[in-house]
Length: 437
Image (cartoon, rainbow, N blue to C red; front, top):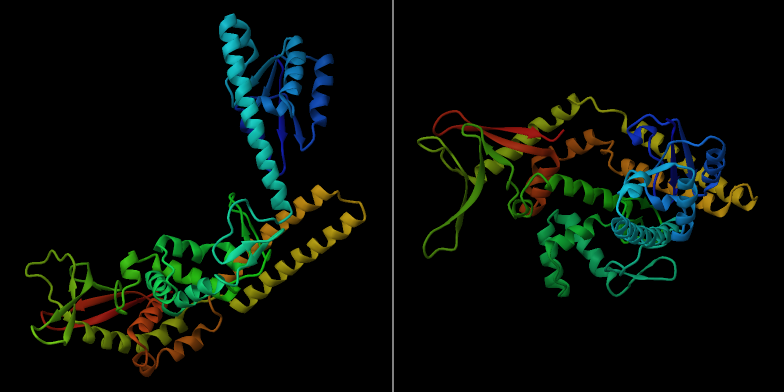
């Protein structure tokens, strides 16, 4: 018993499957990439050495039209070959054994499925060709842009709204705060989910991101700089540790303080006296199992002690870190990006010389652009190389005292992962800071 397999792969849409894909021992695999020369070779070989079985993934791999598929099916099956489509309910031997009415019903259903798959494939091929030309995906342009002939163009009437939204988020690190500011300043009301989508949308960074997740860099004018985009990504990762409301809470210690004795997070509560405007803030456990329960502590005392501890412990903690040489890593990544950009320039030259055809050149350029985008993202996510200098600056108490609560919240979360209250007795306590690095 001789078993052959045939695979047709469109390089614009997919990559060839592994040999183990078939799940059984195959004597030979004929594989086409874009064209069907190997299919013709398969037909020629079957005339002289006919196999018992031919495995394919789907019937539409045998041709570009239903007519082509039908002709090749009839030809191969006339030689007694059992054709099995492993991803469809088709086997030549089963069709022969079925009743006439069943054959017609199954064949009609299968042909309908093949036609539907071919239509979807043609649509995907059209989108893929647009990707190779770095054209925007179908649909409405994101807010702040409008569609040009072959790229997105900044809409000067709405782009300032988006720009100020980003600036507000970068300043205070609060998504909900930036959304509220947008409504108050411009009357533009958007839900927080839309705001988060803006923050992560590659279009605002000058890149195109397609449905398959692939990113092509520098395809149009950006509203966000690379440095601002990297800062936004860092803030989003940092805020992901907190609930949405805690992430945008006005108090700087929100979500950071825990009671070590009862392992409960501490929430901020506000107490006022009747008839007086003055308020008192306390930190108390949200779910303390102790009896009696752990006492609440004045918010201002915790804040003052946090500033004292961070000024004392941060410089020594940074000195103990075994950090890699960030400058060398940045240089290495920058060199790799430059090398790939030089290859891109060579592809244009090879196409002009006729060594590469247009489709091959576009496909290679597309893949290189994806690789460059991934490397640039890695470069943007590197930590700052001057962490020691930053630690020295923020270790001055006056730095923290000059900040507003919202600004302190921003910087606390840059350095502090958690603040533990260590209770020494009923009335005495001390703080232990857990830094992010």
